[in-house]
Each structure stands twice: as structure tokens, then as C-alpha cells.
Amino acid sequence: YGPEQDYLGRFYATFTRGTWTHVHAKFNYQLMLPDDYVSSEHRALDLERDVVVAHYSGPRVKPWELQRGTALDVAAVRRLLFDDSVRDLFARGSNQTSQDRVMDGVLVPGGNSDSGVPESAQAVMWEWVLALRRCAGDL
Image 1 (cartoon, rainbow, N blue to C red):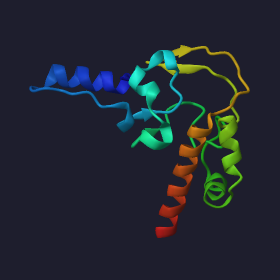
Image 2: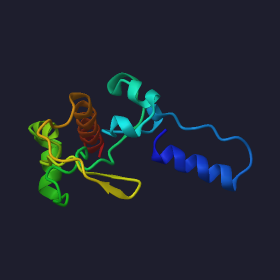
Image 3: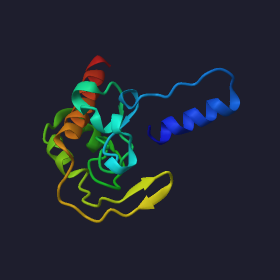
Image 4: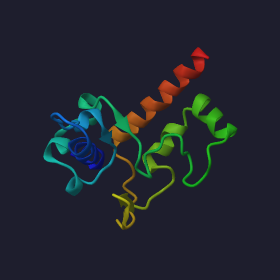
């Protein structure tokens, strides 16, 4: 389970009738959650092979955020659409080396690291860019 799955379970158990079954992490996968925060089933997933729906809520894994704290503007959209070098930015995590994270609304300091974003997360972020490019091509 993750925070969204817990919320949905609590909501539907409180306000509806019937049986609620959890949403498996492969259908609601949050990139780069720490191992001590997720279930063993979540940790066992192969991001590129098993995950059906990934979301980009972590501060280092937003493919549209080419530089941390900088708003998406026309130049950034053009870069996402036409410049393959944006993929290199994903290794660093939006130019962000802090491992700090917000968990359930609380800032959890994680120190600093130059380890970057894992290759599997980079691949999923690049998949998002390619989907954006296909969408733009259909307009």
C-alpha cells in the first residue's frame, strides 16, 4: 500500500457500502518512494515490466520540470518536444540533488546525494516525453 491506497480504503470504508479491495501499486505506482515506506509487494515490482500506471509526484521525477522551481514555459515545452538532451537531465532529477521528501504532508529530510535518479525511473520519465511528442504530433 501507499498513501493514496490507504486514503481510498479509508474513504470508501467510511462513506460507502460494500467491500473495498485495495489498489495494487502496479496500478498506482509512485516513483522513488523509499523502501521503508512501501510494502514488500511494491518493492518487488519491476518498474518497467510490471507497472501499468506511474505517477510523478516526487520532487525529482517530474519530466516536465526541467529545472527545479522553474515554471513550464514555451521554451521548456519546445525543448521537451524537440530536444533529446532533456533525457540527460533525468539522471540528475530536475537538477535537484536533495533527497528531502514530503510524506503525508510532512517534510522528511533525506540529506544530499549525487546518486541521481535510477535508470528505471529515467526510462519511465522518457516514456512520458515520448507520449507528449506523439500527442503533439496528432494535434
